[in-house]
Length: 142
Image 1 (tube, helix red, strand yellow):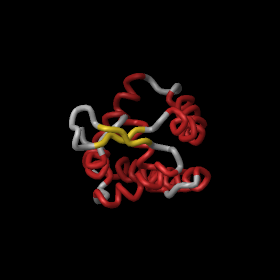
Image 2 (cartoon, helix red, strand yellow; image 1 turned 180 degrees about the vertical axis):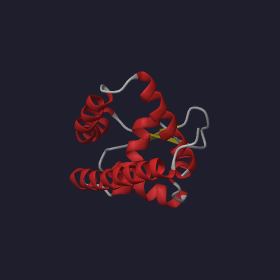
Image 3 (tube, helix red, strand yellow; image 1 turned 60 degrees about the vertical axis):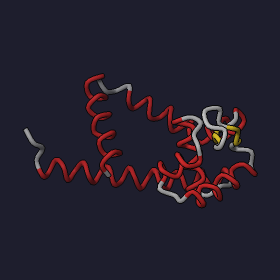
Image 4 (cartoon, one colour; image 1 turned 135 degrees about the vertical axis):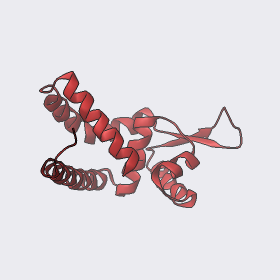
């Protein structure tokens, strides 16, 4: 059975509100960390997905490879990332967050993660599965 227009509209409004809150929270975190919001999201993606090439970061973020280089230069200057040789392709580099950089990053996400876990504890596995399906589809399609 398809969702009603009223139900979809209500969910879309909540998603928009959540997006606005996330953007504003991340702008504040970026300022506190001394980086640009885009830099923080590159760090966030590296933290979530692990080491990757600058080209993979460009594909993931929609930034040009030159734009990624500028971001990485700023992050490297603050010791938030390191670049190392790619063992799978000696012509390229891998970018990763060192332990110290991850610790600095997590100072901003720890409280959010704890609050999120407390809310998630109030849902069943079935509800969490449905939410995961919904959010994953939105990430792919939007």
